[in-house]
Image (cartoon, rainbow, N blue to C red):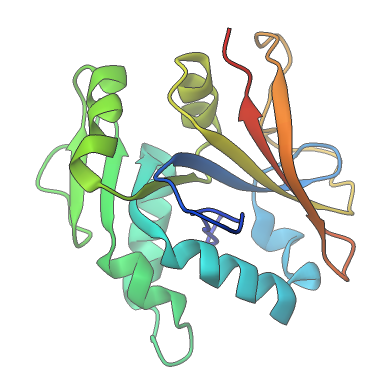
Length: 199
């Protein structure tokens, strides 16, 4: 189960609204079940980076599986013990699914089930702030194909998991990315930011 999330900009200077995908991944590209391998690398430095990024996020975009997992997890969290719960439960959430039905049970959740690309393209104008996509691999790949992600931010952990769902699966389209920022934490986690190269 993926219970982490981060988004927003990790660059200094003037902030521009963006649609950003942010993921925890292993060295061999696995993003599934980070709760089984991520936490040994979580420290105050990473926590501060994630907290600052989340503070710039005005809305979240989720796939069905991730939504259902988080909707079971985050409302049960005590904000005093897990301060991220305040943001996660309060932020606007847009859920891409053709099987879920409204009303959605998690606070501030809206279903996107029609023309996904068109509706997501319009979200940036509606929110006026950053839209973060986290933990939904198939959704991230689809949005990258459609040119609807401005930045891809990865926290690459120095561990080989060996098996599990990967962010980029075999047989996908070739895609060129531009590295615009990179940081290395004391734990060995590397935090690069990429932007898709526009043709």
